[in-house]
Length: 117
Image: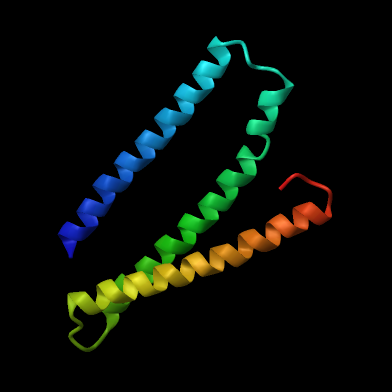
């Protein structure tokens, strides 16, 4: 179980680093080509809201996974690692569903208010 968590952290870190580097190089190329005008503002207009919703999503997922691990620690019965792994995936999926409805409601609210969400 510990090896799976370590692998998830390593590969997750690699994915995050690649994402930040690609965004950096995209912005750098736009600046170098002189394409920084009103059109580019629309590319990054919702960046703050996207980060907020992303933080909510990952918070829900990590809390769900933490609940599965916490349940293993406080359970009075011996629980197999496979059961906990399945529970982690189940609760993580539920976390994604909760995030979907939160994001959907937020986007609909912004559209009703006249925003570009």
